[in-house]
Image (cartoon, rainbow, N blue to C red; front, side, top):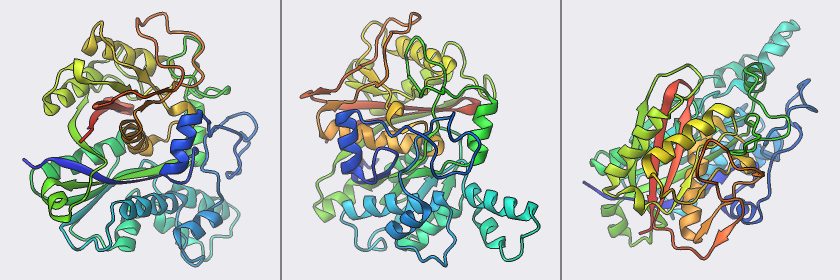
Length: 400
């Protein structure tokens, strides 16, 4: 079995356009949540979101895409994040070693489809079909593969909010079992009217902004972004002489199928995914130094995840925090964004704060970290990603 090393990372979120800007936001606890600016919606003034702070035209310039190419916002941010990951890994030729791409999303190119629909309803559909061809959830994956010449394996995963965590999990398994030597893995999602209106209809959006694990929490905040890791086998790392940023040592997933949108009250699926990740890493709960929780800020999720953490870790719960109060809940991109944050925590010996925490949840014994902690040695970080339908995934990132 090959060890799985992380040699590169790239990210675009409401907290910044690259790993450096995101790291600065984590250190200063600067939230990207604010008023809706780039979507034409009646909810612009009453529903806060965490938007990537750039128009599609600006993103097109950053991605080096011609105005003639009608890419979705989902694809644009994915190309920017993937490029940073590939360049930070020092890869000049993706064909040098067997290389795969596994990317994830939930809405795909729906932002462009919504533009087409609006014009279609006003009898102005002529010449606008170019927007619809980007609708497929895998369209962005094809755009990344084409841009960087990746041909050995290309696939897309969509498992709700655990999508990009599962992309990373699958990539790690393929490298560990010798199917590929290198995989770029992660995910992307852009905000759309569909997601804003859909989550609003579920009545789980906090109009004050999300407050994960707070006793007075009242829902999540939607966000958008993209993030990718470059994973490589120990054989390639040895051959190239690279110094890895970290390792993926454990992973586990489960589907408790308790409800279409709600997590099971006692966190059954979350317990299984965390336990499987620990078993894969060959370590016990006491070896985890920090948990980057899924922590959406909804009544159900935070209680379910909190109970699951206490069931797995007992009376020795390590420091816990959710970073979604900075980036919002980026849906299919969440697992990859928080994977990058977990890696940054290890590299910078830091535990990121659970912003907007004012009162501990009465149902839980542990209290999340509410301010930045530095100067700590993190050997193993657990990152949780839980999605609708009970799709639960846990990843363990380790220091080399």
